[in-house]
Amino acid sequence: NFLFAQKRQRHAAMPAAPSQLDPDSIFAYCDRDGDGKLTRKEFLQALRCAGACPTAMDFEEVCREHGATPEYPAYRAALEVLLTRRPTAEVLAEKLGGLAQDGLVDAEALRFIATNFGEKLNEDELAELMRLADPDQDGNVSVNKLAQNLLPDHLAGAAGAAGVGSSGGAK
Image 1 (tube, rainbow, N blue to C red):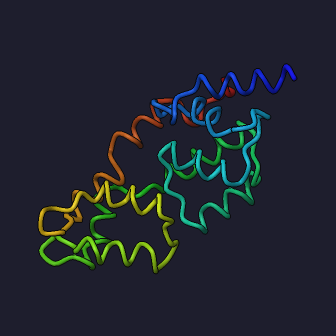
Image 2: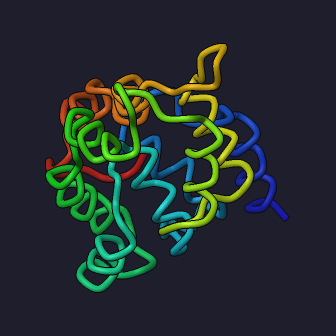
Image 3: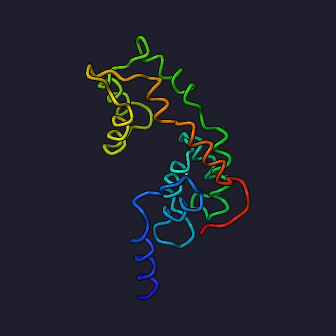
């Protein structure tokens, strides 16, 4: 059918992931079926792609306030709220510091913690974490470097510069 072909063509033309931290592009990319609404899973993915770092409680709160399957305006409103709660790399490094000795944590210990405590990471998420952790030849990870890789300063600035909070619709 014609609509299916249009959706398939739109997604085929899109990059593997949004190349810019533009909330419009992120929403369009994450809205896989092109219906103008995000599923709960797409909503969480879109928020994370846009630089928000919601905890499970934060995500539940924005789902209650803005709906678990939001259209674009609700997604933007939720993103604006969550970006104000986004920790800095320095705060994350402080929190990770309790695991570290001399600013370093063993990569295997990090792997164990990430898969056994709190929000457990799946295999793909763990692989991405370990890539960002960039262990040295001794298998140690600098908590400061890891925090900066997980929460680079340009994410918060780019999302804000993209006009989060201003009016506008998805492209």
